[in-house]
Amino acid sequence: MHRKGIILRYRDLLPAVPEECVVTLLEGNTPLVPAQNLARSIAPGTEIYLKCEGLNPTGSFKDRGMTMAVSVAKAEGADSVICASTGNTSASAAAYAARAGMKAFVLIPEGKIAHGKLSQAMIHGAQVIQILGNFDDALGLVREISEKYPVTLVNSVNPYRIEGQKTAAFEVCDALGDAPDCHVLPVGNAGNITAYWAGYKAYHAAGRSKRLPRMLGWQAEGAAPIVRGHPIRKPETVATAIRIGNPASWKQAEAARDESGGLIRMVSDAEILEAYKLIAESEGIFCEPASAASVAGVIKLGKESFFRKGERIVCTLTGHGLKDPDNAIAQSDDPVTIPSDMAEALKILGF
Ligand SMILES: *Cc1c(COP(=O)(O)O)cnc(C)c1O
Image 1: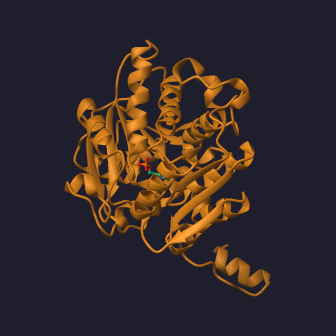
Image 2: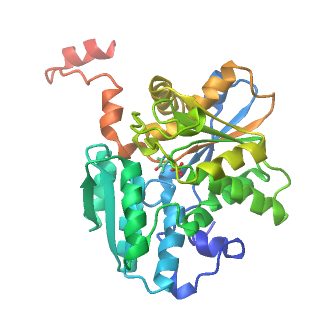
């Protein structure tokens, strides 16, 4: 399909943006890859599909919301944007602001952001500010700054972010011909589960799909405020993109869970990393650790015989593995080093 970016592709279902204000990097239209090897090993009898959001322009789903938020900011005459970020929001804000000719300010938790993401914010010319605190602290700061000073907040508390992110649900319905039985995704600040559910409902209401999925959200054990029922002061997890202790869209995520007959549960870092390697080794798809929380959740539910035969399960892989190469290397065996010699090479290769 001809690529237009999500605003023009789904303009009948999104808030209006004057065409000359559309700031796009042709995001969206990401592949929905059937994962038969994974289905066979973790939930036999089901169909699993991976929505590969790492193939967006800056390598995560954040681009869907950012094209909307930055386009609307441009239409309103803004000249700068600000966000708090565990990494991917800052990468996306920096890129879309660069394209719009705006300044981007990003606040990140010091030392806890994957290198790929930091490098993106830096190369696109954002002003990067590390704070001695976590994501929740950073979000508190930028919310207050944007209320008092002339700068547009582009975190998912900006309603246009959620509007743009709905389009991933539209694409899933377009690709499958209807909504799946289950939609599985990691939950951090909880904007994405909110957006997918709103998207599925909007498509259904528009008569473009016939059914609604159960929403299955997964938090990391060390950062699972929704599961535990209270904010987590010091969230910790290897999955830095969901290292959030007090999600902005907490209530909306619970509504998505309850209205859809779904669930929000948690997986351990060990389970996340096991799924991370399994996706890479069995399907050839490299996602970042937070993304693998979705598949870790399917593994857990598979063991509990949660799924029925023939069910279609879509897992969102939220971001690209190249964002966080340090984790991939840490999870793998070191390369062996040998002299440049045929006999040595053959010995290692086992021929
Ligand atoms: C932002 C992000 C998440 C979490 O999404 P929320 O909308 O904050 O719940 C998960 N994975 C990746 C890769 C992300 O960038």
